[in-house]
Image (cartoon, rainbow, N blue to C red; front, side, top):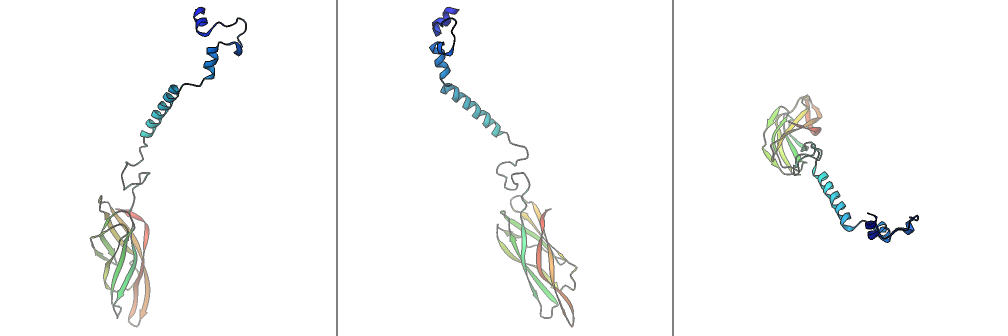
Length: 198
């Protein structure tokens, strides 16, 4: 078998196998870098392995294109708020009309289905685009004689998927008094966060 090694690599000098005396073919092989084919094969294997890793997604991530959930899979809750109110009281302070300016702060179209305020319920059935403001009468009746009613509720649903939500608000009153009695006029209504998913 020694004759084959000698034929391929040349005959080495006996007793002296330092790097300077290695056959030229071996020295050339040691100096050269791996060929481009080997490198490209390694790169393509790494890319395939990387692409396989990218395909595997964690279970908690939402499906692509779901606008109703965030990246962590939590439901995005749209916010509709009573921005301000206009109170129109009669001259004798016996009757009150209350108008609310509703604003859709979300990126979704919603339908306002019900507003509960001062023991009255209205169903405006009002569709609101993102950012839209709409004025609606939420109360018409006698002037409140006390501030016992503190809660106002706005119920609405997403037009795209029918999910229902409720925005609770707290009523703040302005107190007035005259010879005929005491009056509590709603002055502002403030949103109570978080919005409820109902």
